[in-house]
Length: 97
Image (cartoon, rainbow, N blue to C red; front, side, top):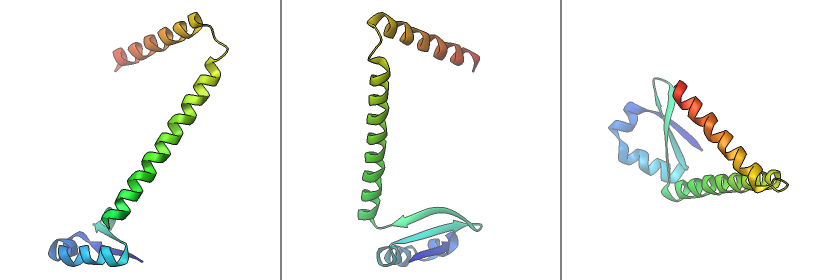
């Protein structure tokens, strides 16, 4: 069950809030009625971070495979030209900023 508390409540009794997070699973801390942070049990935090990293790794592998598939029919010279074009575009964007 999700518990929502005001930041002032959390400040006054942080130890109890930590205990609630361990028992309830998570505590959402609101400031001026807006959720700002969540206190979760450390093991759950580690699982969330690992899942996020795995998702990013999978997306990067998919993007890499897609790029390799698009580049497969290109010659080395064509690849070099595309790289040079991309570098020039980045430099132009940087000089505009």
